[in-house]
Amino acid sequence: MTILSASFVNLFNLSDTAILELARAAGVEIVQFGDRTFVYVAAIDDDGIAVFEMLPDGTLTALPDVEDSVALELDGAFRMTSCEISGTYFLIVAGQFDDGISVFSVDPVTGALANTDNISDAGGLELDGASAVSAVTVAGNTFVVVAGYNDNGLSIFGLDANGTLIPVQNISDIGTLELDGAYYVTDAMVDGVQLILVSGYADNGISVFSMEATGQLTPLFDLADDPSLQLAQPSDLEVVQIGGVTYLYVASQGEDAVSVFSVAASGQLTLLDTVTGPSLNGVHGLRTIDVDGLTLLAAAAQHTGTVTLFSVQPSGRLVEIAQVGDDATLNLLGTLSGDFVQTGDGLFYVASGFLDSGISVFEIAGGNDALVGDDGDNQLLGLGGDDTLTGLGGDDLLSGGGGGDLLSGGRGRNDLRGGTGVDTASYEEANGVRADLETGTAVARGYANDSLAEIENLTGSLRSDVLLGDNGDNRLRGLDGRDQLFGRNGNDEINGGSGADVLSGGAGDDLLTGGAGRDIFQFADTFGNDVVTDFAPRFERLDLRLVTAANSFADLTITQTGLDTLISLAGVDDTILLLNVEADDLQINDFWF
Image (cartoon, rainbow, N blue to C red; front, side, top):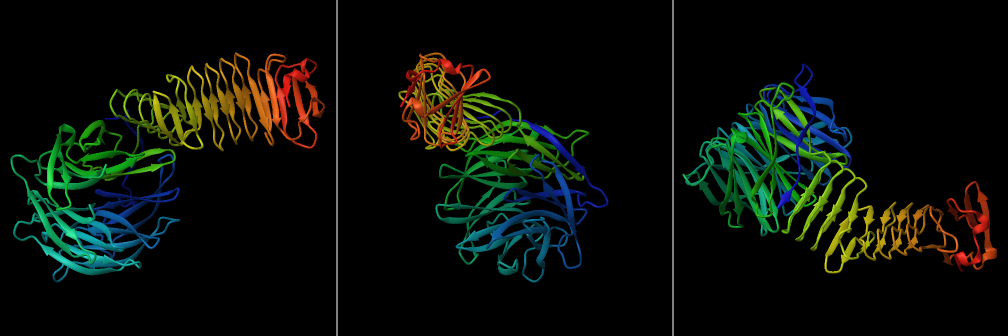
């Protein structure tokens, strides 16, 4: 079961102006180059593409638009897709009223679009009313599949590294094919077979083809709407693969539903589930994103101006977790589609408002959530904010996302992923744990056997623990018990808690607190400039046996500095500062050499 506390937090709204291309905004496509994110919006009435750069906080900055011209095929610009060939990204746009497609290369620095090719409907092509495009790579070759709504067919082109289109095949609606009103195209690789899936909006059905390395399509399977299905006016298709199983999600605009099918290599579609409800009235656009192994699906409903967010379960079924509807401040009226993007600051969704002639940007979640699983196998997703994720029983996946998160997997074999921010894995409920941030492992006998990723801090149990940091700045807390805490490199903060503990900061400038109990503070060569907050002379020990320059008490220079005592060594830059300790109180028995 996937558990997350999600909400749509509106960040930004933009309406059409004389210098923007947002009149009847339709398709949205987002392209990322490292930390640069560019947003492209196709506008049906403006016959062009609005271009923006998204900053890490979700803010959009307008860049030069692309307007239709005699050479371009952007009249009625509707849907887009992007692909990468030999290091160059291309944006491919379907011009519904121009009955054609235009290809642009994308500048990775500026996001600017440079036209590389255009093809209009002619001869045997099936581009009249071009409504959708899909880019597919097979055996190293890239092909573009175009759905021609008015032609009731498909045209397939090769796309080379220069962005040039080469005609390959045309398929018309004949026999049992469901291509009347061909409206959307997607692809899936299933057991080594490349599949192309097409929705027939007027046929109320779906056709599945296999694609060869040459780009040729062969019909495999057709599914027509019947009383047991909800496929009237299928407006969008989205494919998800989980655990080796391929699922197809079909938006039915005519029946206000999203259906889930499993997909076989033979092309056969098997119905698993159907989701309906008022928020899906006129559902038109679907889009998915994988976040640390968890899949989310957004459904944009045209008639209600609503976007509904679902989590995709391991079984492929959908669980609704959030929704947002149009209001006076948003641009969701008549929304046709949207796209996700994940940046260092969070997860965002950009929605088009067809009737509002604008777009709205939302952050998904972002609050400080407390999510708790059960005794089953759970997936807990924190997304943005400072979250507390608790798995309890079962083999759980905990993903903190952005923010400083606290992750506790509980019993079982758990996968803890902190995400961005400073995150902590806690084993307070275990009966002792050995956790190592460098190897990314944590073993608590009879309790947990976890993998750790993007975790900065560790909290042990009330028993005896071994906690080891990595090369970053770590915070290690032993709590009760006789703990062994090793910071390794980085500027670490180590607290033993109650019990007789061994603390070693390793390299870096570390802050060491023994806590209650008779503690040992351990140092080695190049240990840095460390601070011990609570050393008790004649009760605790400073272990210098691994420091080459410290062979005897005579090698130490002990200086009173205000209320504190500074210990230094000849020939090395490393120091130990003992807070609230009198220099005269230190004796040879306080050290191990």
